[in-house]
Length: 78
View (cartoon, rainbow, N blue to C red):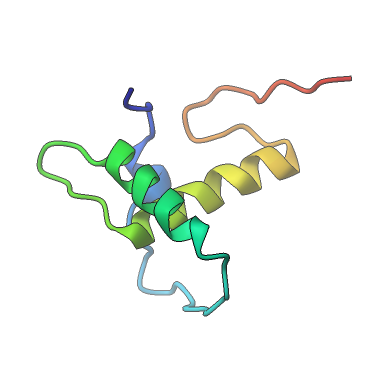
């Protein structure tokens, strides 16, 4: 099942983006590849980096309780 992810939310960073290097668990590589496959669209083959970027963006939204790029507010369990 393809997820509805806005291309703007995971597009390649603007020229003022800062590059970082982090160590991640090996199984995250497979997960990033899975995300990339899900967000790929005709005419846009997402890379592993795009997968990481999309996952990080969604994770920041969830962690900070902000609305994700699709405009849906994350549910808060009390």
